[in-house]
Length: 153
Image (cartoon, one colour):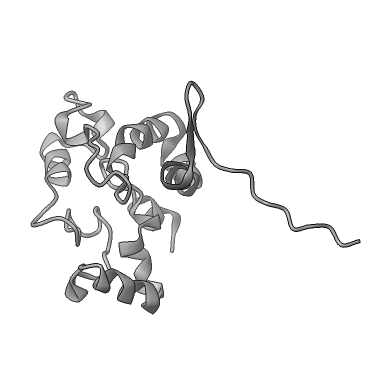
């Protein structure tokens, strides 16, 4: 995949489709079967990503309203819009444990400050911190230090 193709896998809302299971199942039949078992229609998999798929996402009925909005406002990323941040990016507790929707504004801030390539370099850690991190009040989410195998005696 070229760098430009990889950049196209970052949605206008800041979600990195390039590390999404719905996209990654193209190379992993077991993952695809898992997603189907979780209710994702087989004919909607694998996902091609928001931008290449023109707002078509397997977990969205119809075209994604955020993608459509970005197109209507003539922006590549939501942070470029004069209405940013809008209610489409507002966090919600519903399904926060399984969907990355609450990371959008943070993701967009990283993209704005570090560029798309900088974001792509960090996106897997951002996702891991969100889903697997533990919150330290005043410091934010932290990932546990990787465990080291015991040294051989």
